[in-house]
Image 1 (tube, helix red, strand yellow):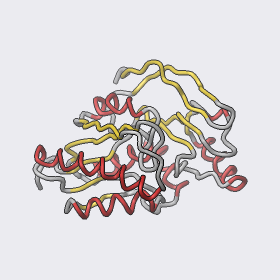
Image 2 (cartoon, helix red, strand yellow):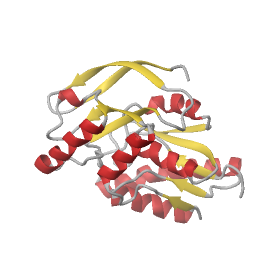
Image 3 (cartoon, one colour):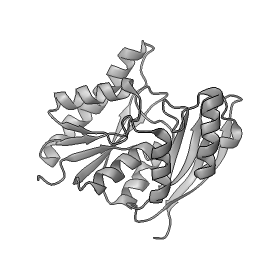
Image 4 (tube, one colour):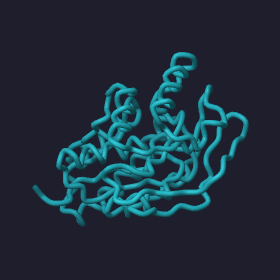
Length: 237
């Protein structure tokens, strides 16, 4: 096994963090984390609080590569998704010589064919395998597994009917997932927020050496909102 040829797509949110955790549990030698920072909304990438990925990477002890996705002109969703994937592919190609080639790409997609199909096609072009341990798994079972493993997660953005201002900054726990099940039945809210209905930040997990602590306040526009994080740091181990 060539050391460090596994690259984990990483936002600091629960899905990418769980995919990384699973990869490490499987013994994959992850050489890099790769975070894409979108300028504006994104069809492909987690948007809020990605600036905290560097803190998470420090806690994880894995080198982080950061890439900016420039804002795109208005275009149809397919073209926009392709353009965003091209940014990711270029970053992986540039990274490949440093780690002896990209052997496997790790992704945290759950149900989004829009995202996963593009990442799978990109992996084929890179002659790389794709490890997507969340793909088509039961969302509630995944959430329960994250809690059972000791993941500490907070909602940092909401944008869906049924999720009001009180959900911003809320910790994801067993009670939260019970409420999300009810909202799924009433409004169709995805239990894991797939498709950007809500986004999360993982502040602690078994593979992190130190927790992320933060301060912030809610920003709400009447229909959607986010947590504006004013400060963040690594706490004691």
